[in-house]
Image (cartoon, rainbow, N blue to C red):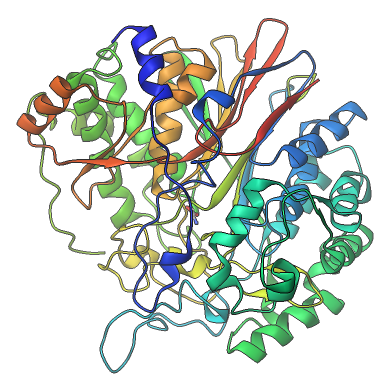
Length: 578
Ligand code: GLY
């Protein structure tokens, strides 16, 4: 397809509207693959933004501005990333959080590379079958909705640790914009308004009802939205560090609400929580170096395995062809089979990281790909995730870059809002294999390696990634929201740039595909495949399924004289440069 035709097709792509209320029904939720109000903000609005000195790209314009404010004050990329993270907890409560967890991937211009894992952990009172109804043997919806769905939050510990080790400013300095936004309020925009309205049935069941639906409806666009309790919590964190969250009045409020609603998180859980420093997975692809996230996220291993498989095929066939799409699908199928069976928290299971990320293993797997026939995914023997996460990318004037993905899991997490604390709790427990062998909210079928154990981190798909150019300078900072679609989306954005020579804007707009081995189907965004290519893929044996807005990425790319930032064209957000 010519670039002009491709652009035309893209302009016509209808985008899914994200409402996550359906997943909170009485039965196990179905997958909601929409992104945050993708229907209202069009692909055409995501124009690349240039910044000569630095850049922040996130799903909230106000949060990106908070990060840029810190960069302008002389903060480095880590300072700005932490500022953005706290601001997202105020302006993008859908996924930004202090009641959830995440992963931050850091590359400093002096060559230091680090990753911090602040994933939630299962509470001490959690048990393997806590979500299985003993009467029916079936999974309940308690891993997604309500007090029992939460893991012990990690965001505050992780962001504070990252700042202490790699930042240059104090917590109070970098949190000042977030505190201001919570205390003085911000203008309700139509994206947040519609998102709140769409989730009213769920959120109204919990204590956030009065704040988010005063008078029975979400505050109208244009009105000032103040979060006094959240402002107080942020002030405590700014003054006391993580102790302002994991101890004292915020911890008391959290534990009291857990108790009241039948949750199991205790003071002991909060006191024991620790973020973990990890060594990023370092891999190569045709001369480029990639730093990706190791377990407890599956993102880095699965992306590395996929890209290693693809690299064995030499220059790949052109974007949009049946040959290319088939290779992508088959590579993803193979790496997801490994992911779903073998990965889990490395503190609890032995993860075969070396093997899965080796070029020799990739060559072996590549040898099993038939260029014109889809391999059927075998039924799962041994022994997942949603898209209501959010990713932000930051780059500074010195060439330091930070790639962070954070989440409550579902939109607004478990729906539980902590009175006096002013924040939503995650429903990350659903990322465990609540019943190994059964699909989770994203249809992912996972094994014993990811079964629930007290103190264990649930497997994630988050893949905040940094790509270095052939001269060893940060080239791309990218990641996404979208559960398992994070992995396939980040891989495709990177391939679009370094394999298909697209600009970052085109790479982000280009229609995406997704294959996660089971269900054995290839999800395709509108405009991804011509009718002829679709027919060829069906003839190869693929089951094609249309999908709207597969994932939600925010990326930054180094260009001559500075940085280009692009927010997800399928969603809301903003890249802010200076
Ligand atoms: N909750 C989404 C993920 O961690 O992958």
